[in-house]
Length: 315
Ligand code: NAD
Image 1: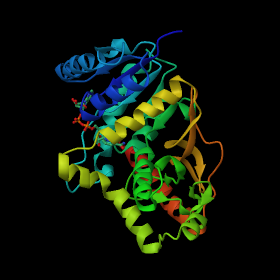
Image 2: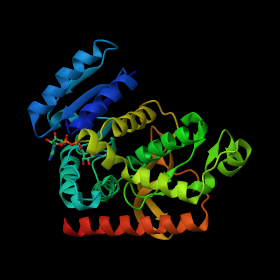
Image 3: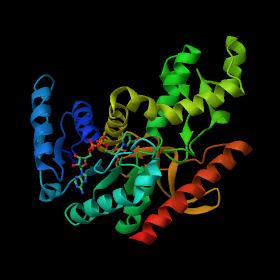
Image 4: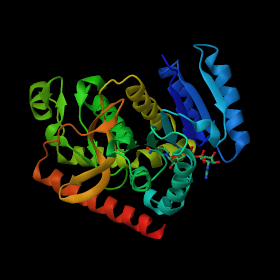
């Protein structure tokens, strides 16, 4: 079997951590790390090669764009980060230019690659990459709210005293301020959330639900206050996305693609529960939402659409 080739562009904290998680999740993968600061990519590769001696046989190398030839997956983690006082949307133009430059350098060499965009604002950037690439919708994936959903499940697990894998609850919409929780479809141990609450005697009222949403929104800020940046969570999500593509696993995660239409808004990138496999990410079934959730999703879709259109007009 051909060795899967995964190219990570951006050798910062997110890119380096993603390489580590991808390597441990897909031990057969060849991992190429590219960065405008070549020395940074080389440093990551050396450190990772030493780490990998303890568990496997990964091939890492620091590359130039030529090394993206025939890549199966191109992960974009290059760009500037969100500074205190900024939102993810404030860095859209700069990072969209970087993402499009990466696309221009890699697409001719890897025409069949699936793109995974983690650089923020990831939904807007995936929209810009998709617009420029003009490929199947499923082949440009924003990491979207995969991480937010992980954060939600961690919070609910703690609150309900149930392992996260028994909780199916999703954060939808923008990876950012307008994200929403689809409470109405949440299930715990195979029961609707409300049934689980009434049978277990636990409570999760409107104030607690609002607090959980705020905690999901503010998780990145909290982590940054403590350690300066967030990278393990998103790196883990990137690895799971790559694994689902390479091993064709039909994994369900909340990631974004440019949907033909969401709540009446056309061609917009935001997250819904998507099936991920060797073809990329696809929506199999539109989620059942109540009226409040649909309104919140519509609002998020408008925000994403406007932010993406602004970036596309500026280019
Ligand atoms: P970082 O500053 O540590 O690394 C960014 C890297 O990108 C640097 O090594 C830099 O040299 C490189 N780079 C910049 N411009 C480039 C270009 N034109 N070509 C090639 N390389 C270039 O930042 P980080 O902490 O790794 O974060 C990277 C991005 O990931 C940020 O946008 C951050 O907001 C985002 N992020 C996303 C999520 C998510 O859930 N989607 C979570 C955490 C961080």
